[in-house]
Length: 241
Image (cartoon, rainbow, N blue to C red; front, side, top):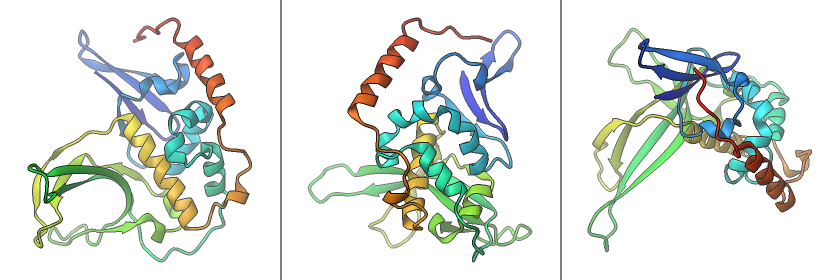
C-alpha cells in the first residue's frame, strides 16, 4: 500500500509496514525517482491545505510534470499559470466560500441505438458554501469556480470528495442510479487541478496568450526530456522505508 499526502509545506510518500502495522512517511524531496513515478499512488490532502500551498510545493517539479500533463495545460507550461494566478490583482469577493471541493461527477447516458447505457465520469473543482452548520436539513451550495476571485481560489482549503454518484440525465427526478467510493490517484488529481486552473485563468482573463513568458513545449524539448527519463529509469529504484 502506498499513498501521497499533501501537507502545508511538503508531499509525504507513505508506505504501509506490515511488521510494525503503521505508515512509514518520507518527504518526496528526499526521493530519488521523479515525481511522475508516483502517479498511480492514492493522494490525500491534509486539513487547511490550499491551492497556493499545493502549487508552491509542485513548482520545483514543473519540468517533469509539464510533459506528462501537456494536454491538460493547453500546451502551456505549469509555472507560467502559477505565476499569473499568484500575481493577479486582488478583487472583492461576491460569495462566501468555505472550501474548494474536488469531486467526481457521474452520468448515465442511454443512446437510442445502444443496448447498454454509457457511463461518463468527469472530475471537477467546485467552490463550496456551507449554509448552516447547525442545521442538518440545510443544503450546502456548490458554485463554479469562475464566480470566485483568484485569492479565494488560491487561499481556500481544498477537500477531496471520494463519493461518486451516477445520475440519469434523461429523468426529471434527481435520484442517483447508483453510487460508491472512488478514490483519487495522483494522476487524476493533477490533471483535474491543472485543467481547472487553466480554464479558470482563461475564463477570468487572468491569462492571455501574450502574457505567457515561455513558448509551448516543442518536439526537441520533448525528446530531450524522454532521454532524461530513460537515464533515470535505467536502474529501477528500490523502495526505501
